Amino acid sequence: MKITPVVSVIIVSYNTRDLTVKSIKSAYASSGFKAGDIEVILVDNNSADDTVAYVKKHLPEVHLIANRENRGFGGGNNQGAEAAKGKYLLLLNTDAFLGKDSLRVLTDVLEKHNDIVSVGPQLRYADDRLQLSGGYLPTPARVMAWMWWLDKLPIIKKFFPTPYHVFDLAWHTKAHYPEWLMGACVLFRRDEFLAAAGFDDKIFMYAEEVELYRRLKNSLGKKVYFTPKTKVVHLGRASSNKANAFVLIHELKGIEYIYAKHYPHLLGFIRAVIFVGVVLRIIVFSLIPSRRESLIEYKKFFQKA
Picture: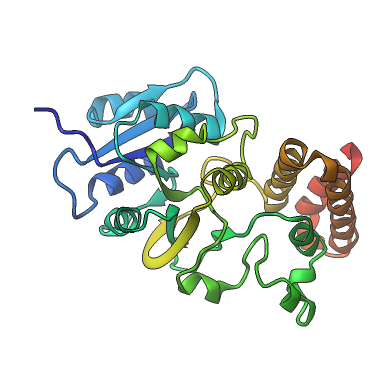
């Protein structure tokens, strides 16, 4: 009799063979599950390395989807979700590695709490430093505080207790109900993820999680949960290897897209807020030689704005 998996672990890869294999093995090594309870679905976005050939040969139990084009993070995860058979979907980056108990801790949360739509663990870098991994939906005030560095000023930041990006490391040591979580390692119920149509694949990379969580909140009204009860190592940007400014620029484009899609009447305002924030960074980083790469990225954005 064929066993229906409890959890489908979806991994989207792009030229990261060694990390991908390590991530896959960390999923299969999860404790608290019987044989067949965990299926791993690897969606490869047309890697130029030997990821596909290696997995076919050495990990035949993996459900492999080999794309002929790069479908991006969102598009790849949507493909995996459509193919999944588990009750739960764990979206796991190629550079994220589960602890032995991580998957059990996360699934227990959704098993016991129907009012929670998604749960994520504490993320740590390879050297065990805490990693920022969540926040609250990008309202105009939160975007302004973030882009204008208001949420970093000692007195003013008190007026923004729920920022778009939570930069307070202490926050990440306690359980919270944020409004979005980084997609490096997050668990959903499959039926809820599919009912929301998954990620908007018009967002190729960065901010796609935020847009999805916004839709889930509006459609289901359920909470998002961050738990420090288990930690997952996440190296960060293994397939992109881009500077912080490059990532931020693409996130800004994602936020503009979110406003164009959901709040078109506020799009002009949010673009102005972002524009001013970019100008501030150009001014400040012009005075800091070590931020030259960031300065170049912001100038590119400024020229296109």
